[in-house]
Length: 293
Image (cartoon, rainbow, N blue to C red; front, side, top):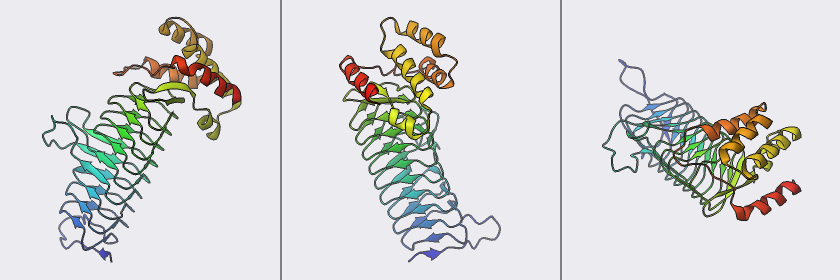
């Protein structure tokens, strides 16, 4: 049974809202701020610097540690951990942070580590994300909104993932990789380099296999827009010549299209990992997939 908890100190704002429900076996450290309608289940542990917004549910055996901010109506499943120290041997207990956006679901055994002093000091998961069983978000990662990490996905430190990306089960993303908007990463892929927006990648050493055509159609991109994207993709990755020259040619041909501009800006941005390219062995396969679409 969950107990309703009240604060007896009338000299300060109530850090635990009177409507919050906390199981008798849960440990909520003094200083933690628990919002209205939160439910903290059996054997959970919430540290003194945690902030839980309205309607957060920690089902059972959840650990929230460090300077952790959890947004409204986030659901955290058993044995998940949020805000534990980064797996960084240089870390010396600095007060780094983790922020979880509203309505995100964090499933069983998933782990989200707080930032490191060697990074930007904060790990961020956006709103309406889904971290499936045993997913790991390493220190200083930034996930935008509507990101889905399937079971057993591993993100190294400092990974950046834009909106509406799907990462298939068992995929591993190298440190400092950037993943653009609406990308799909095939299951069991090893991603070592940046992925352009709207791209699709797969493979033990992941390579571009084309565009995320299914995702584009599901999100209502008009047919004319998809045709333009396909033509720009062929110009960038399917033609001969120096890559920088192909970037310039693509901009001259399609630069007025805002979505193509997004891809070109991504390519030209600073990168520590380089760009994921199309593997030669996948070119014919990609051509057939586009023709069928």
